[in-house]
Length: 208
Image (cartoon, rainbow, N blue to C red):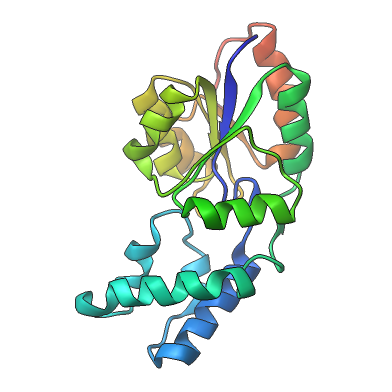
């Protein structure tokens, strides 16, 4: 096999909810604008501006984005942990002779902080991309399969013309991921090494 396997970041490789919750709470403290941190972390996936647009007036969203990103390194990195099976999944990719490519809606430099903190090595990292916008990076980096927890990740895979592997560790259920076009479904990444082995010997895609 040649090429790469692509992974989303938040709730695919990294359970970033504890840190993002802390960052949102600090954003509320700094700005005086209430952000329901628990609600916000229950729907991770779309770009930051989308979430902040739910809480801040349109004219204040860009300033809120800047403030939040300034807080992120101090509040969001240390509390975050790998999702179940994430480190083993990355090892399985390399054992298969493939590269690891992370494609995320998070700003690249902030995504890199997560990867470095958790000792997750990515051969390529593309940030600030969502849904169809991820497809160009997937194609550019020779990604053969894209693993994600959000329906938008399955849209990205479909747009890039590659199979999407849905993991139900984020806000979207297996049924929603299947409806969005997932070729394969996993409850979490603990089953990924076995699935990759099946793919490597030519199993045909089968959702479920």
